[in-house]
Image (tube, rainbow, N blue to C red; front, side, top):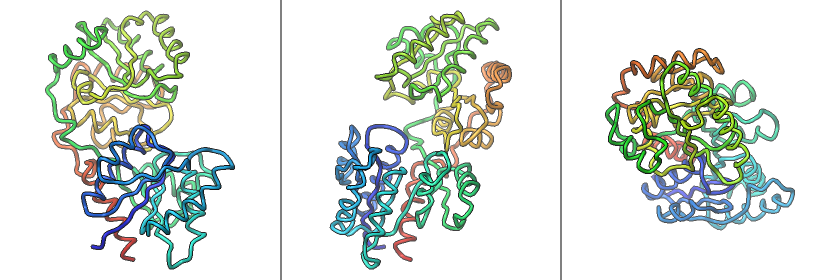
Length: 373
């Protein structure tokens, strides 16, 4: 197995699932003796990327401007200079730039092209570039079906379903309820104290994450005499102040303002899952995968979510009791009551295909498959 040089392209390295996957694959490449290069505008995740032994080249290939086209030449020069074997694009604009750069190269110098469809992007010519890879990685069966539905000319045999994965050692099974962990979280956030069950909805401060649905559920549970509390780690972000004020006003109007806590993201998300009694995944837009589901189930917590997209796919497979018809408020309430009263048996062992090592191995095998072709 010869040493490969793999160049991954994405807009920036700030935060998010795409960025996390990029680091995870770079780490796996270095560990396997390959060379890993990431091209992006940079960000706070560059430091851990470099610490893994990977390399970073700063190039703003995610800015939506005609001026960004000038980076096509720079990318071509990078591919030639670094003798890239594989170019792996993870986002649409970087994919277009990378694809154009590759097509400007002599066939004898041209690296192989891989894309990953991380999201259910609006179908159209702009998004179609994510199907241009010689191998197209789909992060779930939901994504594979979406690609074949909206881009029927895409050869099915070049699609590879490689689910996102977690490290089970980072999300170890915890007893339920975990009163000591709840107490530790309450020391940090006093609003989490009290006797009622704790609901957890992790996610960015955007309307798509379904925060309003979670507040409505909180109000319904209080109406049933259950003094639940709701924690939304990740909702509090710079520039989202008006949205947070709107959510707080909704909670106040519903009489549950004191039972709601919105905080910045927590580095102790596994502990947050352990402190919770029920984890919510209520994204209004179908998600491509739904890593929250497998993280929470790995810790041993029940998950309640809308049964669409990748979240619905995971729930139907791993914990069908928590799947609710999208936007059915009454079913959400009744299902929450059932899960709180009698949680389903915890997943004893996360299926191998949802582990980080499986995701890394399958991705590297895809690279090798192309390199050996």
